[in-house]
Image 1: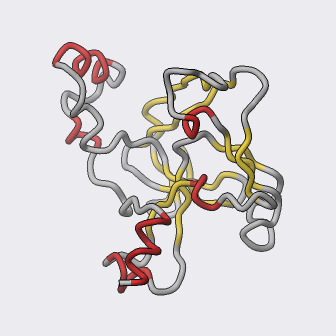
Image 2: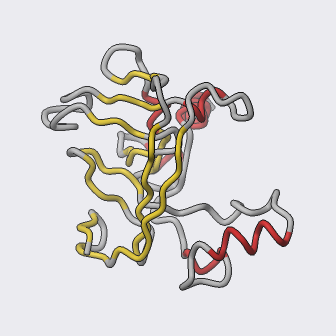
Length: 170
């Protein structure tokens, strides 16, 4: 069981991992970097100590005005969107790094060092660019489901900082 902000304890149903390969030539540079968040970057004990996040990690963002901008009081924003070069830093590791993904019974947010980050959910469009064989292979990683829709809904919308800023200007 893993403690979530929204639902209390939820069952951990899958742990996946991938290897981030620094400077991989077949990926965009953003997907080969980690984001280091220094202690107290988002307030006292947020995070409690320095924490490293993978390139697709998303932070629960609850800043004022989101309800009017997005229809939701909270959204999930990519951690790398908060990079400022001082307290939130993008870095390329010197060697490959193993990244882990936690999937719970429902999409939710969990605490990582005092920051609320989302659990694994591929998104409903995750396999659009894949052929049928690759789609079947992807789904085979999750023996308890037969289609992407069985991942369920996202708990909060995913919104980039760029999109939030453009909505605020409009």
